[in-house]
Every structure is written in C-alpha cells, then in structure tokens.
Image (cartoon, rainbow, N blue to C red; front, top):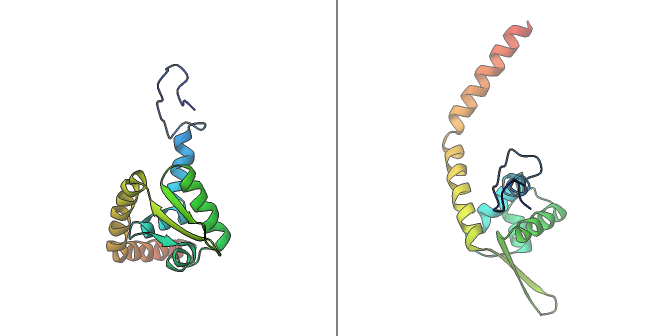
Amino acid sequence: MSCDAEHDQLVADVFARACTSRGVLEHVTGRWGTLALAALAEGPFRFNALRRKVDGVSEKMLAQTLQALERDGFVHREAEPTIPPRVEYSLTPLGAEVAGRLRELIELVEGRVPEVEAARRAYDEAKSAVAR
C-alpha cells in the first residue's frame, strides 16, 4: 500500500493515518513486540522459553505478537514435523537490524532509570504541593 498516492514509488510516512509504516511501528514498539524482538536478539527460542524470558506476557499475546512480527518480516518461524511439533523462532536479517536498534534504546533507558526515578519524585512532590 502506498502512503503517497501521487507517486508510483512507496513513500512511507508514519504520521499518515493510513500508512502501512504506522502499523509496522506499532508491532515493533508495542510492549510485547519490543520485548520479543530484544529477546530474540539473544538467539533462537522455542515458544515456551521465549514466554518465560518475556516475563508477564500471556500465551495468547505472545502468539499474536510473533504472528504479526513474522508477517512483517522480522521473525522467522521454523516448525519441525515432529510429534509434538517443535517450533523455534528467530530473527530475520531485518528483524536483527530492528532488534539492534531497540537494544540500544533499552540500554539507554535502563542506564537512565535513576534519573527517571528522580524526575518522577520531583514531579509527584510538585503535584502534591499544588494539591494541598
């Protein structure tokens, strides 16, 4: 789907409501998408191992997230024809590139948690002073 109907080539614009890139960004940056991609950056995972790694995600949400990421070309699903089926998830080259950038963001956020906590305390103190 072209986000810019005036041109034959695809011009992605995440700020345009109907642009495909917005949905893709939602898949990547949603809570579970980010965590699943970051976890898969460590290597391939079977479904239940990935679910344990991404603490708090339900089976249904992880399945939906992996399906969306697979459809978008970020995740590869390998199913071996065994009984029961052995399914493993890994990143595609595109997924690895995106996950690398997400890891940078995650590391930045994790490294700045003390500053975030200080900002929250200051905000809460200022709000409670106004409410008095």
